[in-house]
Length: 253
Ligand SMILES: Nc1ncnc2c1ncn2[C@@H]1O[C@H](COP(=O)(O)OP(=O)(O)OP(=O)(O)O)[C@@H](O)[C@H]1O
Ligand SMILES: [Mg+2]
Image (cartoon, rainbow, N blue to C red; front, side, top):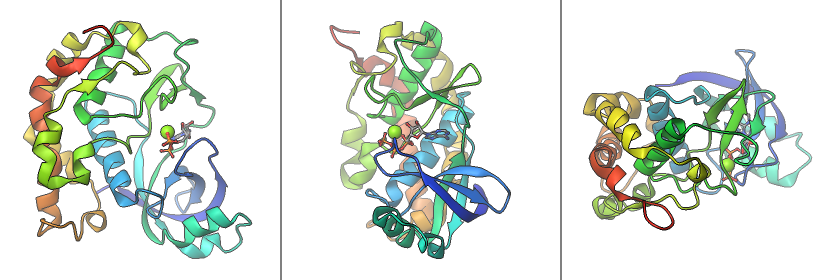
C-alpha cells in the first residue's frame, strides 16, 4: 500500500489540469497535488497513476512520491467555486496525492535539451504503458532541480477500460509521432535492452500491490482485488518483451 495521509486544508485548484487537480495540505505537514476520485474518469485514472508512477520509479525514472489521501468532503463547504465544491463533495474517502514539486517548470521541448538516451527511456516507457498523454502539446513532464520529472499517467493502459478485449488491445503498436521527446532522436533500442528485463512478474506484483483495494472493488469479471491486480500486470509483462519493435514515428522508426 502507499503511505496514507489525511487532508487538512484545500488550498487552490491547479489551473493547468483538465481534471481540475487541487493543492492540499495534510496532517503530515506536506503539500500535495490531489487527484480526485470523483473527477471525470474516476478511480481508473487513479489506478493508472499508481501502476505507472510506481513502475516508472522502480525503473529509475523521477516521479513525485505518491500517497493516498483521506478526504472529508466537509473541506469543500467553504469553497466559493461551484465546480471545486462539487468535486470535493463527490470525493469523500480515498484519493491520490503526489508530492508538489514547488517551483517546477513545465517541460518545453524547444527550450530544454534531453539526451537521446533519456528520450529513448521515456518513449519506451510510454510505449509500454501506452501513454497517449505525453505529446509536445501537453508533455506532462516537469523540469525541477535541473532534471526531468514524469507526471500525469492517468491516460495510459487503455485496455483497462475493456478487460475482455485487453489482450488484443495490448498487442497494438504505439504511435510516438507526437511524443514530446520525438525530436531528441530517442534511442529506443538501448532503452528496451536495459529496461525490459526489469519488468518481471515480481516487480509488477510489487507495483500492483500498491493500488488501494477500494479502487479495485466491483469490477465486472473479477472476484477479488488481487485478481484485478494480476490483470493489470499481465499486459505490461507481455508488452515489455516486444513493444520496442512496434513503436512508430512519422516516416518509419
Ligand atoms: N507533482 C507536481 N508538482 C508540481 N506541479 C505539478 C505536479 N503534478 C502536476 N503538476 C502541474 O499541474 C498540471 C496538471 O497536472 P496533471 O497533468 O497531472 O493533471 P490532469 O488533469 O491529468 O491534466 P491533463 O489536462 O493533462 O489531463 C501539470 O501539467 C503540471 O503543470
Ligand atoms: Mg496533464
